Length: 263
Ligand code: PEP
Image (cartoon, rainbow, N blue to C red; front, side, top):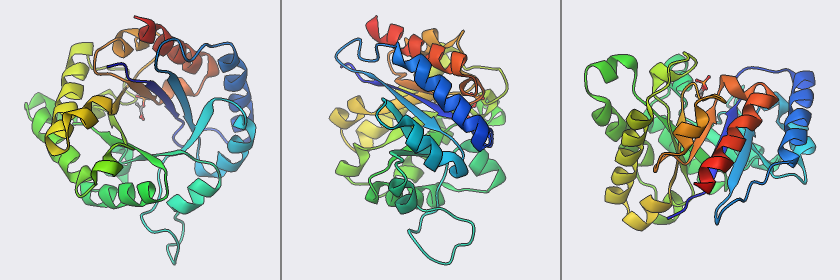
């Protein structure tokens, strides 16, 4: 089955409002010339600027094929949660996606699978597509427990999701040791974990659902390695960190997804 490819740029805590305007305008200009529906399915493009730039970014991408995501959210919709932002608020400014459970959130902000699960449910009930991150650390990979870690994370974050809900999620496999390090998982290493995730979802739900699930790879994806990664059978896109901060490398990765789609 042909799945769409989803290329999302996670800006993390980079780019102030002025730099946001410049980068979004550059991406817009470069994306215009790309044919993003080369096959039966398409290449979807998402940018994830910091919260404070979402409103401005939403205005700039209006009428284009670029979609908007936030990098995090809280699991309640309103209330006395100083400093937090809710799914309802993200939806209201035009977000269609939200990254949840990124390894930096797990590492620096102690997010657990249980908390991420609550956030996923809230995102879905506000019609936001969660991009749910899972991935093992270097220590875990070296000690041979990658499959167990991924299984625990996938089961934990998806706990209690209905058949209808599961059709509206995206999973991003991001080996923690490959994030921001310049080390990429080999195409085989990545594809194997993607296959495991698909198998888990088929066991928890159904093969028909698993087959449609978009599973992105993330971890030092760049203009040089994107085509090979995106050409793998079970890699349906990329969650891009460092390389999305420059319009040329980000659009080159989108171009690689288009090429991979034509294969
Ligand atoms: C990320 O943070 O999701 C990521 C994959 O970062 P990088 O591409 O910089 O490794």
